[in-house]
Length: 295
Image (cartoon, helix red, strand yellow):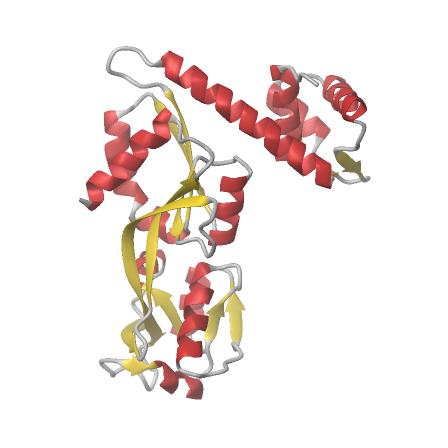
């Protein structure tokens, strides 16, 4: 079947909002026209794209794939229009980035500042997200580029390092370990540990540290946000381990940071994009800008 540009826009809006009313408002059309478009597309495909409940819509398995394909088609068209829109020495286009919160706080501000100065005609969208969510947005076409840790599986991705940092112990200034110049992972067994949730790339780093030290540790607390782990540690409720790049995300006045050894755990932060999806002209320019800052 051949979908029109408007039908693609409506499918993407439904996938983004999971609401026919919200999708209509987003596109500035009537809700009945959105419903009719969905009905026609489902009829031609011979399958349901959404499950309707009293509260909201939910994409079916087929719906997820159709919306992802529609989003990719829209991105391809946007890239074509962007290339046509170039004129003179200016560039007009769009760029969407998903990045770890720590990267948003440290790596992105100077890079974005210089990028906007060079290319004021490119509209940049930044989404802060944990590693797994950022990669999911890349795969479903929501973003052009991810700034995060190295993917666990690189088969379908291109990863290019732009920075690295080290995992360090973070404790209250009143903690018994506070005066140490270094601490081994094996020594952490005696203290309650504040862990990041399993969806965080930081959790994988701390898990690796404990495995290398041959320790089995059940976290006393498990949180989603770096600032929450730091706040619990500052209150003396346990110890935690965080990458140095995350220190910009919390107030360290009541905390002590100590190098962790045996082993020393480092992480690589870089740019990731899909091998089978060519970068847009805007994304290529931003990649070049990040490379220049690393050089």
